[in-house]
Length: 300
Ligand code: SF4
Image 1: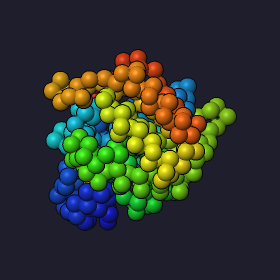
Image 2 (image 1 turned 60 degrees about the horizontal axis):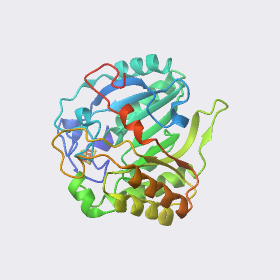
Image 3 (image 1 turned 120 degrees about the horizontal axis):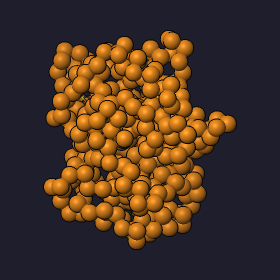
């Protein structure tokens, strides 16, 4: 895979040759590293449809957030389950039969060439699901341009507006300016409209996810400012209240949960700022988002 000979798929730009087995920050070589392929109903309702989607959870991640809710598989020190392309495609085809013909790739940034080879294999068999690129948005613009024809929907996090927080929680000080530039590119590709089929299942678009961290309301409000000023108030925003401390040893305030008061303040600010395509959550939804990747389907 030529893009991996001097890897600069993501803004870490490790420039190592992953085709020779070497690994950079994400600790992945050129094989397909997948932790789970399963039917998943835990995304936004417009994405889930009635039957859920087929989600491919790639292993490892180029961010390493210390509070990651998928830490069992996203930790770059975790054991990688490399799979053959034919096996991955067979599993996807099987899970797609249970789902609404929507295929999500979770944490795909470090495995873009692998993702493309999966999609092309499906296309060769005449299988053309709606493809979702579910990303932390620490993406390079060139990489996003290279996948424009393969991706129908961007499901993009915007995690930090404050550089010191990005450094402390994800060792990624330049996240705010990098991620907002990536989201601007996704917006250029997909615009502000989310298109759905007659069953109201998503077909094309951009949804920006903002995970509201406890006691970090200023960070979240600044994110909304950045999105309004540098992208558009006409984009779809999903304001996530589902944060929970996934591990016992997290520092304050990550060892707490978001309060209703904090969430209400954020929602009110988003409305005041002019965002109208707003997806909100009940705080109680935290109980539904505790995956266990030691199980075949981490969400059951
Ligand atoms: S994808 Fe991995 S190896 Fe490539 S630049 Fe990013 S972190 Fe480094």
